Amino acid sequence: MGQALENQGPSHVFDTFAGKNEALRGGNGKHSGLFVADGFPVGLSAAELFDVPFPSDGRNAFTCSITSLDAFALRLKLDLSLLGPDDEVFVIDATAARAFGPYTRSDVSEAGEWLATTFGDTCVLLVRSPDAEAPLLTVLGLSHFYEDLEAQRKELGCNNDIDCDNDDAIEESSTGVGMLIVPQGDFFQALCSGALINNADTPSFEPYFLTSWHCVPDAADVNQVEVLWDWRADSCGGGDPSISGLPRSEGKELLRTSSFYDITLIELDDVPSGDLGRAYLGWETRDPIEEEEVVTIHFPVASPMKISYGNVKEIDQNSGGFTRQTKVHWEDGVTEGGSSGGPLLLADEDYRIAGTLSNGPQHSCLSTGGNVDWYSSFRDFLPLIEDYLTGDAPPIDPPTAPTSCAAEKAFPGNATVLDALRIFRDNGLKQTAIGNTFIDFYYDTAPVTASAVEHSASLRWLVRGVALPVAIASKTLWGTP
Image 1: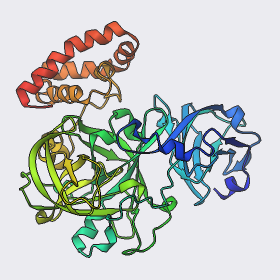
Image 2: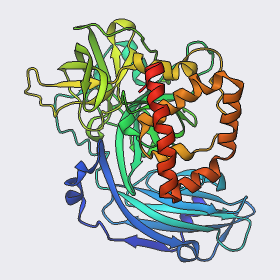
Image 3: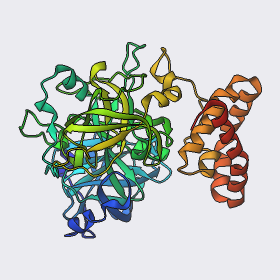
Image 4: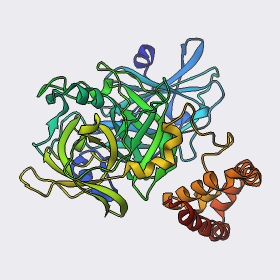
């Protein structure tokens, strides 16, 4: 990495958003969640990005720097599909002298691969190859962070720093709560919260992570998600560590999701430990009780970790288009944009998870009763994920299952229908030999059929006509969303 910083190649500077951070903040309501970055297409090929290589560990190394003037952080989106088998791509955060990668041909995503977020307005792209010419890659686009995550933009002063709580159990639980950076749309980046969740039946710690569906609404975005750990004050009222140096994880796979309840379980690539360790939170299946004490741990408005204290007001509520939610009133502390997906923890149950933050009105430090939120129902989501959180082995899905199939192309973004079809697969088809034969055939032919459905309106309508009655039947038979 030192060589790369010393041998920086061509500089590519973009002024698309120069001086426009405040105006970009004004468009923050385009999507749900706290949006912190907008972007633009770049379209630079390797021939345009790099010039003369330098030797590095027996290979040729090519570098360039990319700048978006006035950005507080950057994310680059690359097409890696034409990389050679031995080509490696790294992105370097120059402010922290920290490299992320290698990204290889195995990281190819259909719409392009988002590299790790780097802080400051400039990052360095490093490519290593055994060939004399730079590998065939393209920088497709760039996300320009118009919010300074290290400025502690705390709009409401009644938030509570997590390190001001002296409960050892709270401190332990807090180490399992992470802040998500999630690509949404073409070039937007949003922030959410979420928590590691434990399977107590195994001695190992599987990297399962729970958040809200609206934070990661598209399965294609899961492996583009970053989770930052330990973004917190170093003491009560104290300073904060540099966000550039925080431990990170990346999303690996969408395990189960429900737009019906607004809750999602994903798997991370790995989970690094921190100075305080790393906790995997327990979970609770009983109904919350009215007036019982609860807390939530979260990252409001891109600020370091906070904690709020409240009590349950009602259960099984419909709110924000979601069902069977738990209504909570905050007595001390509030939530804000960026808190979505944060866990609802039951104080009398050793701070076990009972749901994730779904929706609520704008809060005020002067309010005496209006600071309420609605949380998803973990107990209703559990039947969909029980095989991951109990027993000594996760469920075995078809090993050839693709990341995209005909149903996903026919119902893009409609997680409710896709949930119901998956339950029909698991509870219906998998129970018979003929059903399992059909599943194997479906996944074996999925790459071809998915492409055909994607490019043919008539085929999409045909698949919808067949699949929708099946989804309705699944809901009737098994009570699924």
